[in-house]
Length: 84
Image (tube, rainbow, N blue to C red; front, side, top):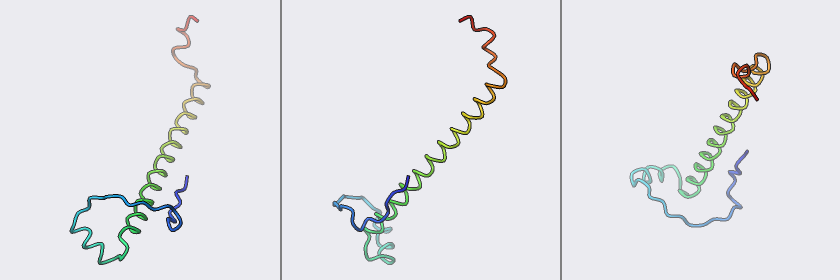
């Protein structure tokens, strides 16, 4: 899933953030538009979290596939005790 990081045309609303004053002073040395910078960084953060979740899901899917193949080849040790 890709997050649209182009927020130029997205609806904008004011939000209150509590930020460290020293960090803001330093950030203003590098950007005149703190809101756009924070918005961009937040979009990157979200995209990274989505990538992490997708990778975790791929790893889980692979594990399930491996386990299912193993179970098909070797059956379950509990199958011999199943009376149903």
